[in-house]
Length: 198
Image (cartoon, rainbow, N blue to C red; front, side, top):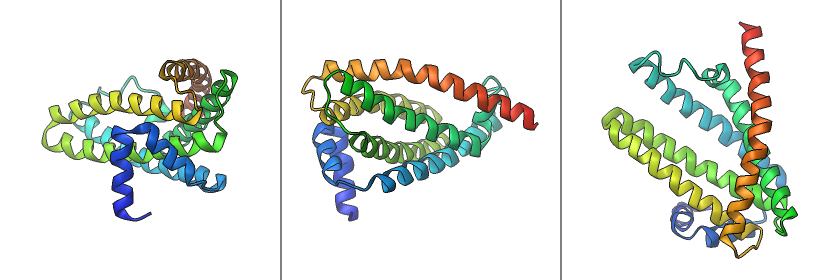
């Protein structure tokens, strides 16, 4: 993919998520590549997140005191993030199919992987803004989070061929419930691992 196509796909994702989903799915990338890309994005996002966490901690040592231990270790956070993304792919695929959707796992996988690329770009921008204008950085995070939900709804709707945004929202909400249960188990295991290692 050329830089021009890359930038065009970013813009299309931001303003026409359903059409962008069609383009991404149409690439028909091998499943192995998609999982590798998701793992790479997990590592890169964990690195940037760790940098931003250190910046926050340097300004306020108590800001991260209540966070799970795994969130303070880049490697464990990368593993946690990859696990969370994998569960996201599986739940969005399975629950969507149960509600009449037609998306295959590879369809959801490429879309979630692309969202992580956008998330990484956003995190880098936020890290820079926090150093220059902290308030603006917080605003970008807020707007980015809302926009991310809009994109995800469009992606799920397009992947499952619902042509019904409300059904896509339902799939996402049910997936969140399933993920909350699964991730609570993962976090407890990682928390025990960190405490035991300490």
